[in-house]
Image (cartoon, rainbow, N blue to C red; front, side):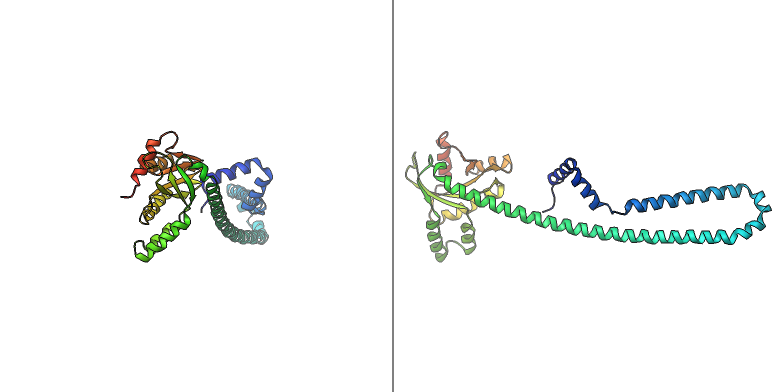
Length: 289
């Protein structure tokens, strides 16, 4: 994953607060010998300016120069030698400049490779953290499920074994394809229990649950798809998504419109305690024909 705007802003804030880190970052970005080359360039420019001024004066004093042609001719060899030396210095400077450019390109290429490796490392770290958060959330959810669903279902238990048995029989009978079986096996959590009250009191419900730190539309779609497969196994399957938060408020509203049971930070929506009629409407939506 590439760096986000938040990552860049966070890095800038760290650099503002840490002068030592800021100097180290500047040292990595700028070649260490750049100031020396700039000084050399300034000195050369000054010498060229002086030479230009002398040339202008020489042109202005043409008449006097004509009278001193012989002496000037005598000094030509010396001037030529000095010019050759300057040209040699200029050629050397240009060669050193080309070397500096080459080193700069190499440094840039190395920096880009390092950044690419850092991006890969960050992506692996983010992926690992996501997996750890997901595993921790599933463990926490299993532990808290009896309390979370106590007002909705009685005799709550893990439904994984029963789902696996029925799924195996359904695949053998051709009611469920191998691809659909694989899809159902990837469900985060199966919970079985009996409706605690109302007109369906005592009816067994299978809660097909997708757990995520931040519930997204993809989680909702998976829960619906997997609950529909579970219904073909003979379950009264109720899709459920649960997490610490929602990726977007619109996703939660859409999930409720799709008649999903939604959990957010340990609270169920619709609430069995506050709105049992809404719960019964949800159960009716998913009641097998």
